[in-house]
Length: 203
Image (cartoon, rainbow, N blue to C red; front, side):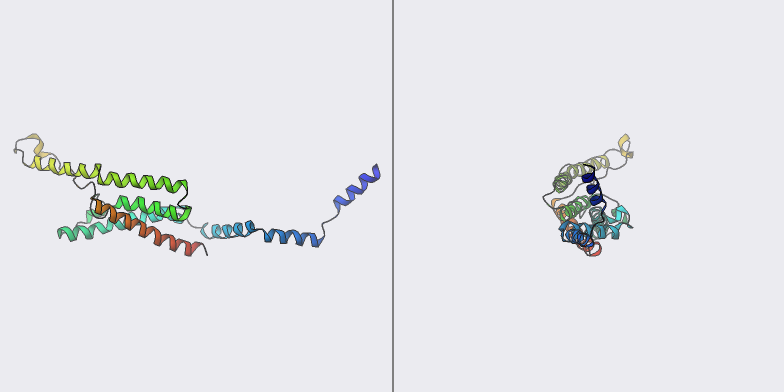
């Protein structure tokens, strides 16, 4: 009995043959998961030195779409009124809809990166539809009501207590065409940024 135990212990302590080691390594190399994990580590090492905010394609695409839409309002306002108003960069309303560009850019980027069958894309799509509906519904009519109230205040007698009140903001919502242009802008910016992001960090 002790002899059998001794033989088993000696065999367990024997080093692995070089051929067996090479066979194991070849098996690991042939595993398709090893190649995918290697590519993932290489890509992660490329973007590890980049801040998380900058390396997120969805967030960058959304912010770029919003910024471009806000800057474009200065030019569209000048085309419509003939006046240069730089406050349109931080103002709401007007052509195009920056909120629509923001949410559609976010939704498009997530759909390209995560897949349109993912739950996060469905969540972003529903969120975008709600924002666009609100822009052409509640906010648009609130702005039109503000225009009517401002006109009523102007027509009040000078001694009326409401004549000194501050005018209400009437540029709140968007027309359907402004929302459509904002959506096209968001999709375009998100697609171009995603292609650039893949070409930069995936190779």
